[in-house]
Image 1 (cartoon, rainbow, N blue to C red):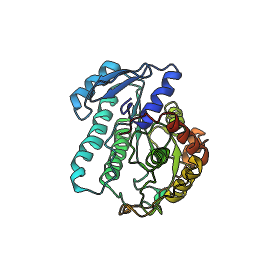
Image 2 (image 1 turned 180 degrees about the vertical axis):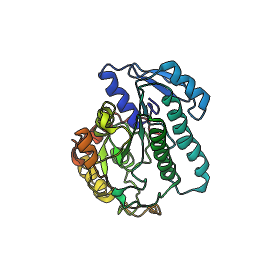
Image 3 (image 1 turned 60 degrees about the horizontal axis):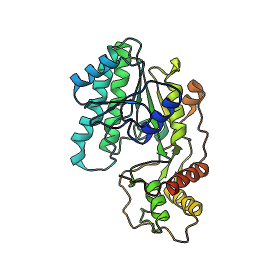
Image 4 (image 1 turned 30 degrees about the vertical axis):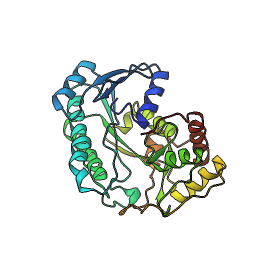
Length: 296
């Protein structure tokens, strides 16, 4: 698994451990095992090192979750995003194609052009690199019969999300510390999906033959504004404070994103099981229990 130390990756690693899987995790830097996984310090942007790792491990399934996650509209991130997201994905696809029977599951983005957003153009260098990576996944499947599936999660949230710049951990940690968080206007609409539901989708897709060569949206299909999510968090925490909407400028180019989960439901029998209020309650409870937790 690449990106095993990230938000979705750590939850997926834990679930695989509970299922008794032999997990090989990849990172640029050595890490301590949290769930019995074996870590390999490999830079996936190095094609030779990636190929050598895959040849050594000879995996049955590769979960490729690693990437440079940055939705900024800054020309300075174009090159590193292209290098870290697209380059590493092509290296993984090329390496795994040499291992007969190995499955690959890639993590796409809901900001890629797709039916669910009217095929809107990518709004950031990150989304553009993800769209290109999906194109290469389809190319490898079409030309070399690579058994690859792309899952495009929407706005994933839940316990142990390390990036405190994301709205749910930012608001939750602020409220638990007795601070009123500064926010954008809160008008952005997004499809919020609980991390355990995303993990379920990855695990199901990993053993479903009908998903090979397909690209699946993973979300709830429902748009909820940032303002509504923030107000729910205030209610759950029971804070007497009020959110400071409009303190931070809205990000330009954002468009409403919602998953079209019909294909995932048809091919995987998968549907999200955790509704937004329940998921936020679980998230707040986790942060309340782990207040010494150090976010990024």
